[in-house]
Image 1 (cartoon, rainbow, N blue to C red):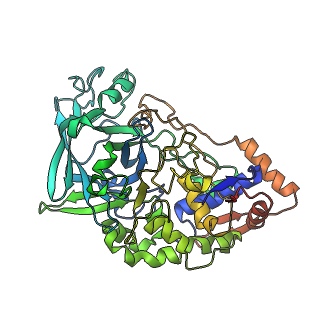
Image 2: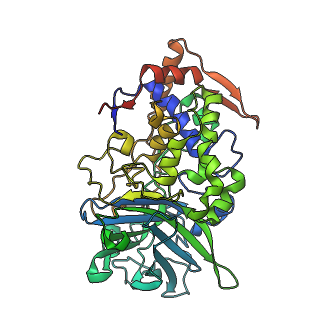
Image 3: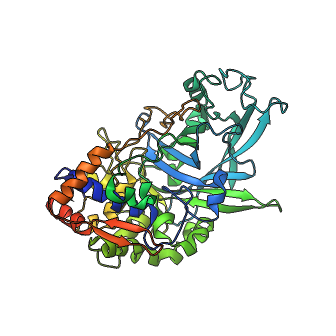
Length: 503
């Protein structure tokens, strides 16, 4: 199914839909108090206190510049403040970081890529991360560094792809790292059979984009705080792997078996020496707004083959009911089989494998052509290479997921969005594609990307001049909520953004 754009977004729609997008991201109303999160940043109570083990995002897409390969990216450690020294940011040495591949649809891993890390110090007689300008990954001025080992587990065998390579360090600042781009380039290396893989581990700018200021009385109480990329200027630790498609496909036959399911996990070693899974991520936003608070820790420790225990949360989701109760947007009829296809099985004719076991995975059809003109709305924007057929760095998963949850695929086209349509910095054209991290020497690393307060206030005044009054709601915790139920419904009826395209 393809969709087309039919109308632009007005100022009023932008402000109101920002609130709807915020509800999707945070599960604000009715899900109970939880820490601030985005995608899978701090999404469950236990993992919120363990940032080194917290998987924040997972990406999988056919590589635009090496189209016979798939790029896999997984990120950890949310909200890295660039100047957060003296010990900056490192992968845990008592953890296994995994990206798992299901290539036959049975919800069990057939291929696992596993990273483990070691710490190294040049000297422990200093508090400095770098004792002078670092001009290479092996510069002795880099006082603390990590190395990683990468293994592939498949068919009961473990193959070492990378025995020991340097992790690209945190960007301390311009004095310590005068040419960080050169360090990034040196951190990209060949691996695997005949050097056909590309691999990277190190710090990157957080590629996820959205506005999280919902916590200030829903964007300032008057929509004056919307459309800003809250994660601008924050970094994450990333692993990236570019893999030939045949290395992922069942029996190595990409054309015959093009669809794979992908998820990441973190295993933490206990005092007894055994590893236990403490974090899990496939599709973005599932553990945040689909799984209720009581089951979030259980989801992080679970395996996709056991996802039947969470099925009711998908077929009878809470979020559309909350939006209907608070904002007046009608919830689609249940059971939500459209969400089952998006989140659990893959979409018929696109990325659903034959005989699939329903399970939460990021599913990718490796034969879908690379888009020459990518649309950030992915499949619902007419671009079948985008989310939920895998996930590219520039896919606007907040807008996509919110519109789908509100019925975009079942005859209820809508224009819900959070007002943040792109990352604050551009992604790179070659592997690992991630933007360079924000520098520790930047005195103001978190730039505002939203419209000015005056522009936003003009939009609010327009609502009132049109004679439509917002509703003032009081939350259970005593906080006042400014809701625009009537405005939102009218805005959608007047200016639908997307509608099904004719065949």
